[in-house]
Length: 333
Ligand SMILES: NC(=O)c1ccc[n+]([C@@H]2O[C@H](COP(=O)([O-])OP(=O)(O)OC[C@H]3O[C@@H](n4cnc5c(N)ncnc54)[C@H](O)[C@@H]3O)[C@@H](O)[C@H]2O)c1
Image (cartoon, rainbow, N blue to C red; front, side, top):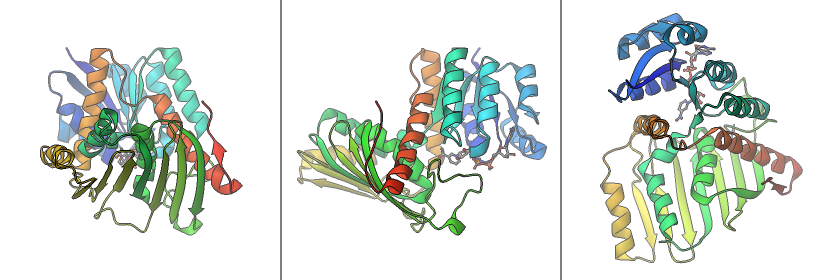
């Protein structure tokens, strides 16, 4: 018997989670999907061959799942996460963990009290491009990372913050400039004083990592997702690497730059880029959900947990504070 899994929220993200669980045949049983919009739940249940619910409490009481994926809209994560944890389920919550830092803290505390795992779906970490870059950094191929530049579409800014932590470790200090036009904001639920989430026009942040690297992150609403989700360049003490042109349909970088032009390093980089089949954003959902299940079943730490989810929100909050202050904001240990 595999893990019994339910999905709450049957929009784009919930459909991706449901299909990903469906793909883990024999290891996972998708016991139900739920949406307050009944017809959305019914349509997804039909597509993936499971039962539809209009209320999470009914799904929890009837199906008694071991795991719940929370894929409701950004402002509606807290209630279902707390309900699923209280019912004794492990939870995989879509990003951002919560719409406020206080709610994110409540969720992390509730997971601790329940003794259950709270994962957060930072699926970009599972794209071969970023996994490969992290492996290169860990192997020391580039030497010590000194300077990195990340440029992203505004919709990927939140994932880019997580990738900064994933690739370069914890951040010690933040400086920032935000260009905001309130009428161009995308999310009416969103309180930009709390954290930025999606810049309306642009944001430029400078991070000093605890390890001593300087990372700049620029994100703009005026970029095109069809062009690239985000680009990364790393200048290390021994070599430079740049990954550019990662569109949503196939996130393998169209351009990989290496300096010095070390044939060995370029070939290694080329090998993992070409050695991977096309890898879309949808594949990243699949890989992330599979990695969560792998970790649960192996009794290991999940790739990104509630503490990571909270840390990304605090990093984003520090960006807003730094812009307001016109100075540097230090992050706690
Ligand atoms: N990781 C990624 O790459 C990625 C990509 C897209 C979206 N997301 C995230 O996924 C989440 C959902 O995004 P989406 O685009 O699918 O949103 P959506 O609005 O299309 O779908 C959300 C669904 O949740 C339902 N819902 C809301 N409250 C509910 C409740 N209490 N009980 C049951 N159903 C409820 C709504 O009726 C809606 O159908 C967001 O947090 C978003 O940021 C992540």
